[in-house]
Length: 259
Image 1 (tube, one colour):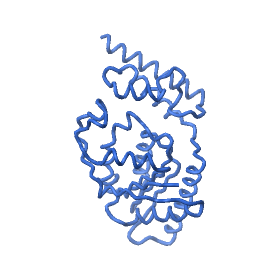
Image 2: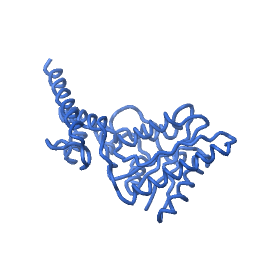
Image 3: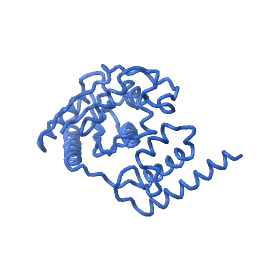
């Protein structure tokens, strides 16, 4: 198994040591190869807000950098760890540039066959950053198989060290299991409703966003029977709610176009 660690830390500190501990723990479940992508060393230009990557395709972006090579490295890995310490209640600057630079993937998600692990470290709390990274990963198409948020003050009490170790062990076990089984969980109502909402927007605005429309059509997501991005069981109640939202959004878009 090959795991790519997208490392948002500018140094080999707590987050790196936590990733290495996950590697050690995963090795007890079977062979695994870790590869690090240090964002500090990547050539990623800040997003210009021009929306060319969204409207005309990522290959037409005026930013000529490592973005597409990074996407390819993620696609070649069996699993991806998104790792960042908490800086000023958010991800690091390097990681935010990375997320913004790949914003078009939220329109055209492409990692549905991949599992992700969210890894964060902080002096006080990691929850907000954990939630943010998990949301980004889900919008990109990843199955978030595990999360590990560690409290790492300059001097870590023994009790906190033990808790961190338990968190890492649980995350490593869950991530290993997901990588070996390839199991995909059924989506919740939020995910199903958002899928149908996006479907309505992209189908009804195909002239405004032809690249998105073409991508969704190629994936089969615009077919009448499509219930979600991947072929997994979907709760019928969630499907009904999603179809209802889609119908309302289509009607609203058409009404706005006619007025």
